[in-house]
Length: 217
Length: 217
DNA sequence: CGGTGTGAAATAATTCACAGCT
DNA sequence: AGCTGTGAATTATTTCACACCG
Image (tube, rainbow over all chains, first blue to last red):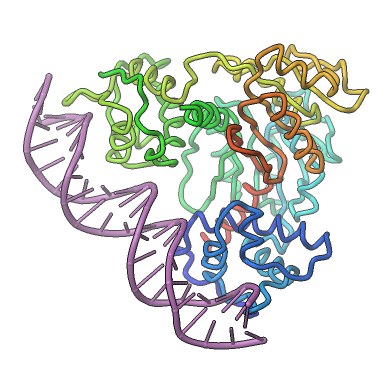
């Protein structure tokens, strides 16, 4: 169990590996609350739907965390993965766009458990300013820039309508945001240095219809 | 422009290709409403962030849709892609779990535009039964099974709490659902013949924090 | 044993580069 | 000229298989 602080050159770590890391962590947390002390690569793989070899290969990118003949210590591995994903710290997030999706995000209590603190929300519509959801208040969009700087906000959850997304994203970048979780069905045009991850429900539905049809062919 | 009704053996079509198809379609619809008659692979690629060769390779899995020297007819290609993704028809969907996320989905008007008709919602909590959002009503969970059969519901959008997700999914499968869009952060254990696609916001946030940290290293 | 870590082999996906069409 | 469609080459990812360790 070597704790490696210097993450090895991230460019040669497969993207798919990073995506699976989140799944492993989720599963480890489940084992943790079940009180299971260890887990092996086959069990972990089965629970996320992949092979044992893949699990071992993924983890080996970051260090040697297992014990031959035993498997992985659940608690220890969870700590390692949280460290790799950088969820071993608190992140300040804001919601931008307090429509239906935005307010649903504000109200979801589980983000706080995971270290994502939603500390404010913003909306351009005057009648939404002052609303509250999940214990945080909706502020005027005019305060966005200043707020991000003053409160060291690293992450913005962007849930404005499609047509406003790029403009608002530009403001976020100018204000020094570090990452954007984008719910609008547009590709944001963002310079280097700011990361974007998108969630697109329509797209997911389209994947589903394709798969349904393909399965019965 | 050959319209191929027999989709070639779907097993050898790369998964990434299918994911990109949705992006192409989105972009084509944008061009369509801008009144642009044609688009070439370089433009299309640039707008979704990939190379022109990739665009052509993706499309060539399904037929020959382009015209040398010209590019692709925007409207024609959109029709083809809708056909491939099976969004050239109407799909009946229900929302199961009328919490914050569920109601946000019900209220999102754009799904209807794309052929996804959300025709009902269900919740186990009596105080949520009878609520309305986005023009559709919340029914009792007890009616779920019967409703799916009687109304030919093909897709369920599952937005119940994590601990209930597997149970509800089992009910959906028994009732003959064909696909599930899963918002709960669990891997659903579902037999063959029912497709599952997941949306996991916590996971997306974790991808984001990893990327933010990796970018500055 | 039972299980990890890891090179080597196999498979999948992307990019190149160019013949051929308009 | 301008652009598609596509084999061939390259690069990325997964799987295999086995040495080695507790």
